[in-house]
Image (tube, rainbow, N blue to C red; front, top):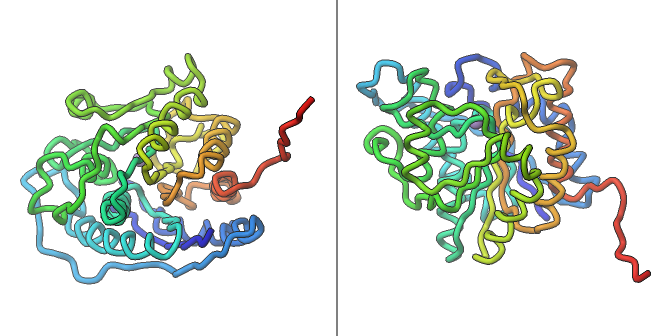
Length: 306
Ligand SMILES: [Mn+2]
């Protein structure tokens, strides 16, 4: 596999500063080395940066940093489209607002190949707010609504050429949903597995179902991994911790199953805030999880005939 590492020092979508250091922390934790060790070819294209900001504002006074997020979304849509034609892009965030652009870009690539795009959203939150519904005004809470083509973004964020069918989005790890999001999710057919569902069924059963769907449709699979998907005790470096997250074992199982499926074509690593980390342990965990996704296993499991 040819991996393309893309640094996205975006922090304007989050309430706390620090995510702009995310790409640096992932480099220091040697994401590239971990992938090379697995036999992948790796190109780090460096960080991308936005230029001039558009003159745009929204009537909802809570909305923060809209011109910045509009500029990032436009840039990242182009970057994701371009890089997904070169190999497997790994987007090193940066806060989760970046997925508005990365998913839009890989969706354009998928459409060009005549294949449906599926999105696996590993997160504590559904990030399904619109510009009208957000109360915090932090635009990292909107990307899933944007890339599935929910109303209210026209004239504020770049026009979406290829919205993702909400029925092809699966969210796992959810444990914090605002009422407005709950309503919007109900009206769309997004699959949402909260932590209770994971406890009752086990994450493997839920993920297997989704992987089978992607495979049956000959789809491309984009994985968006938010640090707050994980239990805060093992991944403290995030500004939006919610107790009760995925354990170390659950997270690695998800990544190993995704690797076995051979379906993943692009990856976001988002919300890493190194300012909140403890001696780099969250950055190192993200590198290890990415390595699991890209083929690292503890032991080979040969099939025995006896
Ligand atoms: Mn998120």
